[in-house]
Each structure stands twice: as C-alpha cells, then as structure tokens.
Length: 115
Length: 116
Image (cartoon, rainbow over all chains, first blue to last red; front, side, top):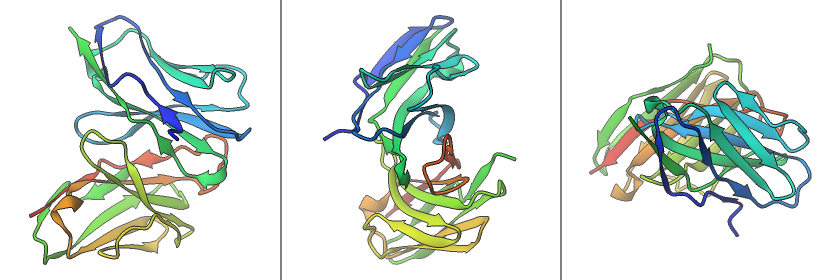
C-alpha cells in the first residue's frame, strides 16, 4: 500500500499567490517525521521543512508552512507569495522513527508559477 | 557549510566501462546515502552507510559497489552497467542514521549518468 500519496501530479499558480500542495500518509507508528523537498530541474533535492508527529504547532520556514492534520494523516505544504523560482517538483516524504532515518517519498507534484 | 558535493555532474559510459561517482560532505554527518532517481519518479534508496559501515543495501545489483573511505567521503563504483541504469544518482547525508527529531537528509546536486 502507498505510504505517501501526493494526488496532484501538476499544478499552476499565479505569481504572488499562495498555493497548497497536498500530501497524505499512512502509518500505524506513533513516532514519525514528515518532510518536504523541492527539486528544481537542475536535480538537487532541497530540504524545505520538517514536522515531527509529536509537534503540536505547524512548522513554518519563511514562506513555507506545513499544515499538519494528524487525525486526517495529512501534511500539506503551503507556499505563500509564490515566486517564479518556486517552479519545481515537490516531494513529500515520511520517516517512521523506529526504522532508522529511511525516507519514503510520495510521487511528487510539479508546480509551475505563472508570471 | 551545509553542502554535499558530487562529481562528476554528468557521466556517459559504455556497458564495459568502469567508472566511479564521488560524494563529499564536511558537516560532520555520520550517515551517508546513495539514491537512484529515474525521470519523473521519486528517489529510490540504494545504500546507507552509518559510521562508515554499510547499514542498508536495498537489494542493489552487484554492478554497483559502494565504498566509504572515511566519514566525509562516499563513492559508488560502477561496472558493466546496463542502459536501464541510466538515471540521476543522488548522494545525501544526515547527522545520524537513527530516527532523531529532524535529522533531515541533505542532498547533493546529483550525477546524471547515461549508459550507452
């Protein structure tokens, strides 16, 4: 069964608008972490934001915030004030803490920012 | 310094060649990873080194041979590859192999490998 699901293969957003990228996960573990990575066409995976399963507050890093809804098992990424440089592939990943630092990635969402 | 470097950026090789990919980090991280990524797919884990010892081998064919000469360096030796091995090879590192809070993996820019 898919552990991480990203249901939006591709999305468009107008420059300066906010956008939400969806991610749902499946685990029976109590302790886990959720990560978002950005991958521009150059190939490098850039770490954006982390949310631990026990964190009560949603994580924020600059223009990125993670909308963590534990009961729904969702960890959506919100990008505020989109910029042209935000055009990239975005991957959601989960780590089950009893399995080392192994990441399970979702299929990714390609975000395109329109000028 | 939060950088993971990889060389070369691009590599074209024939099926009978032997080549090596190199990865380096100077963040004092004790876990290092090799991933393979095909176009439009997420990265797939190949190997994990923890404290310079091989911890995870995700059933990778023996034509891929990893090596960790010291805590900062990770190599991937390639021999007798197939065209289907053409992909982006990503190296990553993290503080530890364990499921610590945070402990995010930092990735290098990757090596784009083409096997003819």
